[in-house]
Length: 77
Image 1: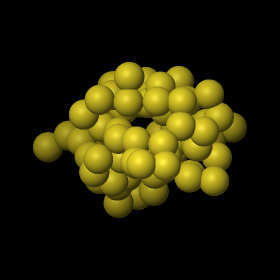
Image 2: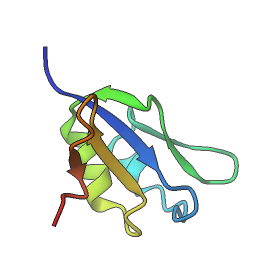
Image 3: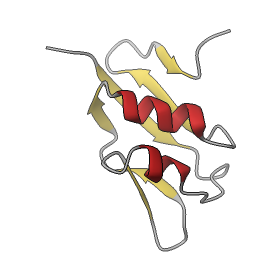
Image 4: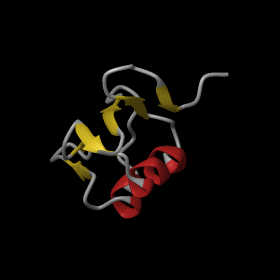
């Protein structure tokens, strides 16, 4: 079994650019207020979801390893 991630969007930071939806259409949706949210907060590790987090212009998306809480994105400095 592969890695599982917990994906969160900080809605106080989200500007509704839609870049996450463009990068990972199966992973994110915009609601009626144009705020992003993950389709499923828990997901298998996915390169498109990671690309969406990395491409977010305001770094509103965070990903941690399910279970351990180890950061995937943004990485610990």
